[in-house]
Picture 1 (cartoon, one colour):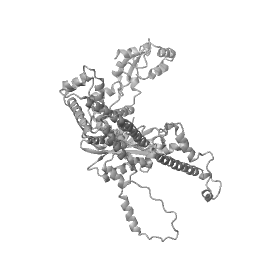
Picture 2 (cartoon, rainbow, N blue to C red; picture 1 turned 120 degrees about the horizontal axis):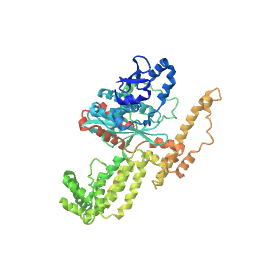
Picture 3 (cartoon, rainbow, N blue to C red; picture 1 turned 90 degrees about the horizontal axis):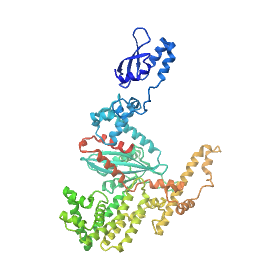
Picture 4 (tube, one colour; picture 1 turned 180 degrees about the vertical axis):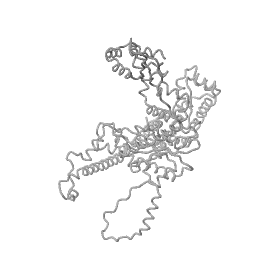
Length: 629
């Protein structure tokens, strides 16, 4: 019998004596056995550590005259009261039963599933003895699920998540999608993400799928997989555009299977035109053939990938012999420096000791990596002390020193490529990036590069190559109505991004046409709402005599003029009608970087000890990790 139990019931020792303590089946409460000191002989009464109601009933039934005395003893306190929060030592030892009561088995299971998903843990961790000891500390009576149960809970959570996503997207009118392929552990996957603007114009993003693609990534196979995913969520008619890279397989898939609006019928056809006789069998066969085709939404090429190609086109500046000579010399020494750091820990220690930090090593598959690598070299050059500068580091590593011309080249290269890197970062944004950013970003980049060319001694050919590439790769977009309208409707840009009067006039006309369509839809919706309240018996009257528009409705010109000349520059300042047009054209993302980030998380799940992970399980764990918080 534990002494602490005797002390706990000492206040009623004039009535009862504790003779036995046993653990209950739930291992949380305890069974108590008391002997009544006021009954003749040996009278025992059982009770629970949770309640002493049996003892109270015994006193009331057998010793009614002493009932008030007993109740007073129950209410009496012995010394200072115990703190409401259990001490840590007691909790870890399993004595914090009051805390355990607040953690149900169901809530514990959910937390375990969330931990495994969010931390990309192998399922076998739930059967690890050390993990169970950690989770169950202070939670007597609880248990950790098995691997089999974990998989069942994961599947249930995955299905519930997809159901919730489908329901949420059902209430959205415009959805943007990004797609790309990824290869890991000798397996290929198609990743797709969806994005839309909420009521407050904040962007919401979810992962739609990361499905296994078996065999070659052919255009028809990609088209079939993308259509299947869109149909699964019933959003095929809501997608404003699917943003992908410029891979030939994606480009061909959309070129062949993108849905094109049908041409309007000729309204002037003669009513006496000859009626064509159609073979029903042929018509049914054509319909069957059409069913074999895929139907994809509009396609948007990733602007960030295009900007990265512009940066790579800087190599064409090597056609200038002087620039080429300096570039090869400076880049050769930089590459030797990076190789030393990457291949030798001793060299890395020397670099860290001399410079206080390591160099950034460029990666061919990472955007802007060469710029950031040379920026680090220039930064170390500028901040090095005379007695302990980069020349001293090169001497220690046994490498040739940088010449003054090479140092000047690196400084100019960083200066020229900085706005290019900034433009790429803007275009690959996700939360606050819109299709309307493309033309203003490119136009501003062209202005900055133009302003730099006259101040450069070495890298002027680099600027010329970049400007030529920008014109070649982005020029067609400056003649695209969708891009022009997306920029004009954004309150941050309006028409300030172009000085071309032809483009400004075209943008204003597109705004007017877009606003006119929005207002027409508003009138039709209002008419539909009032159709049931017609004050005439004949419905044809309402169709023949349209109801007059409200006199308070602004004209198209007034709405466009307010938007273009208003002082507001944030999304909160958008006119109600302009906001609807903004959602229609700017839901689309200019970059497919969102799906690239999906693959980065996927690599965190596909660790070396998880290469045998099932494809479906991988997709479930990845989507639950990114779609739940």
